[in-house]
Length: 115
Length: 114
Image: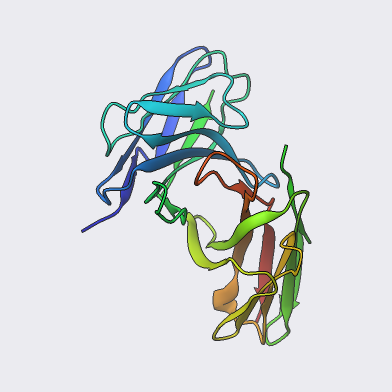
């Protein structure tokens, strides 16, 4: 059953702690993305990766870090430097590549609450 | 940088009424996509428009891409309660170097009263 998964669905952390959000896809997509969703602000791009071992900052990368060691995995770390980390985090993937489609397939999301 | 503005932010309709959301980009787009997010869910791809002036239909949904490829609209005829959700447009800059990087509008939250 192909798809994109994120875990956990809900995550609670204390202020000052780093936390890593998981994103896995078995769609054989080259490109992967992390978005943050806040009420009334739509989806804002944090980081994206067009190929393994490469990634670029999006519009709001400060306080976040990523890695892309495997094609199917693109974990996001929310560091203590992120001033307002409580949000809904969405991971997405697309076929990518020069001839690929940029239609994005989203995971179910992780709702992070920092106490 | 590229900005994509979407209006209205909220729309409340009675079941059976029509609904339209509009999307405007500060730059020319190579394509525009529309997504729907049900309450508590994640965005799901609806359609992609590529050509200037393109119009596509999916049952009661009509999508348009402007002649200048800087604006788009989604129109729903005779809304149903199943249409409830947030509708997002997302555009890719025609002059962009980052393939696949989309800029999303803020979304329009649609509620339908039975």
